[in-house]
Length: 342
Image 1 (cartoon, one colour):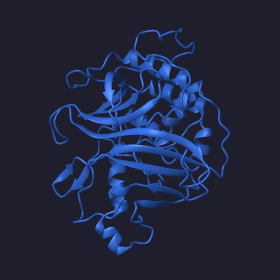
Image 2: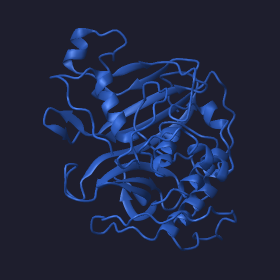
Image 3: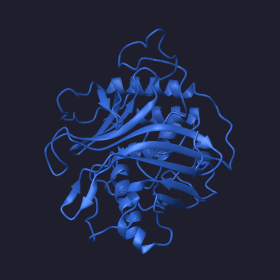
């Protein structure tokens, strides 16, 4: 993972501090990779990767290599197994299973996602996501553990309307005293720009709805960006995170993204992982250098719970087993206006 830029003063502006957090969470699966230059708007937050669009009614037990409890395995064609990546050094008790198990797990999650309801979404509506998150805070001496806190975001379905972010950690005494134009209000409310040109790294619901639903076409799209000199074939893992972080995708698109993720070399299953709300689940992970990113799913319903970053070896990132960033999604919905809640 590329390092967070050095602290550049005694008190970072709120937007700058948020961008540092976003940089940490967006650089996934990019060992020694420099991203190609591309247009991006201000990122809105963490990568809560494979979000299922709403509550899931189809219950399956997502235990790798076993049939779902109470019913047969979903009859859907799975993707070709990816080439196995280097084995990761995992903390005790979280040893990953074989890469083929990750393919099976992602295929089952994709089947659950594809069975989700197809909702009617209007362009004048907003995607709402409520979560609890914890990111490292940047200090002159380097990153230190941050505090677990709540955040809520409202994003225009088609990008044509300003959104809103509510995160009290964006506010500090300097921000309030300075009264910076466009900065956060004292309650942590921050206005968000419109998104007239959504792309793979800054999507809207409407943009996601136009993506391929065929896994092979989706995988080709994820790999179609200009490759920099230090590109690795794990880059699509981070792109999928951009596409589904704090967003909702139509069921067929979400399923295609999961099956495309199964084609990425090095994906693995972690039998037990815990999100920021303390919920246990089964996880799909990808290791880069000495850190593993884990997407956590409810093992009974397949619903996405959250994401975390775990240190694999003692080093600059921390000690083996340290959780240096974590999230938990508590609510997702389509609402009519910023500030509305389901």
